[in-house]
Length: 484
Image 1 (tube, rainbow, N blue to C red):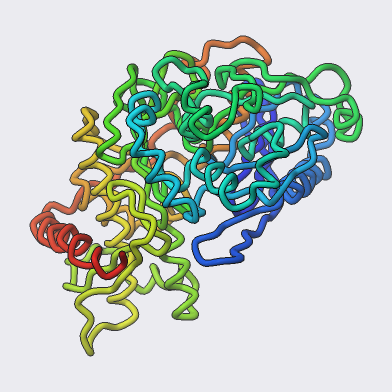
Image 2 (image 1 turned 60 degrees about the vertical axis):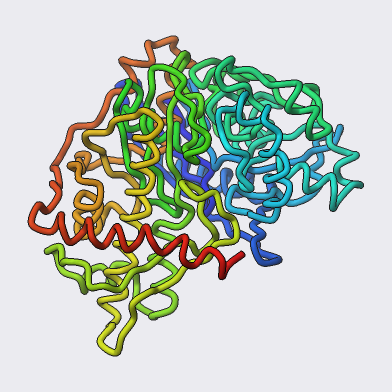
């Protein structure tokens, strides 16, 4: 048996698979986000451990024999988080999360240093780890002075699981300290934020062994014998391993809290000025590009909170058949935007409201706004040399057929739906655990799921969607001056 642990923003998911990659069971532990100030987003690392213990206990209660047969564990996690520990492994402050934008001033200062884009292949975004450390140095110097190690969220879980300080390429590529082409820490970039390689974890590939489960935990979980822990992956690269998006040109769209358009690359193709991320993949000698929007299902959940209707009820009111855009446009920049704008202070908007703008019209605009934001990502990836001819949809938002039809029509490419099953980050992490424990060939393990159906673009609405997208594109420059 192989265990995948996915540390997300809202919870930890634990998934057990067998040697044939059949899912045996899964369980969850819940997490909350603390927002003490505008633009801040934090979590206590102790809560990650509690949620992991909850998830594993859930598995143990239903599948004790299978849990006892674990030979490999893979880790996946939310990226970019700054988890700071001292020389005794004590956590120095709450982890600053991926969607925290407080360090936008520091990010702009680091990004102005040409070495960062040249070596990392990426803009220094406020959500990345390096500018958070620059913020800590400026605003919490006492904390900064005590830092022995900076760990990404899943790698703090690894420390708890194994006692080792280890990370891997895909997650570390989101720190702004990795030389992404060379797949190694850059001492030059670390020095620019007054840090050293000694304060970083060791680096392995996601498919490689990265520690063994501590004997106390193994005994607690009912396991005898060694359990290998794989390098693992950042959440999007782990999802790509789960989806089999590992060969050149394969792509998926993820509609989770944030939205992601992800394409695997056989070579390193940076184009930082497009705000496309060019990161290492979890497999050796493989990279990927992705565009990220900060609010996907988060935008629908916000609308749900305001209207008092569940997200499922809201999308249900739209029916199954895609409608032409109404003229009401929604900009989903509720916590700023990453690709293509790299703008931490821009905020969302409804434009074009009138007396007839019902709840249904606003829901339609929210879904279209997210679809158009993903189209922005497609255009950015194309400009960076990546062609996408179709995408596979994953994430909670992909349960809405209407939303997927809107995305297919906005992108002008077919959207494939995987057959029933869970092919997300926890499954990808379990696959990496299997590879690390058995030495299996990553390409033969990370195969794509069977396609259950395809949603084609609605040709009769392509013109209306193109017009609506042009309106959408024109609005960001129009409102930018109001936010800044």
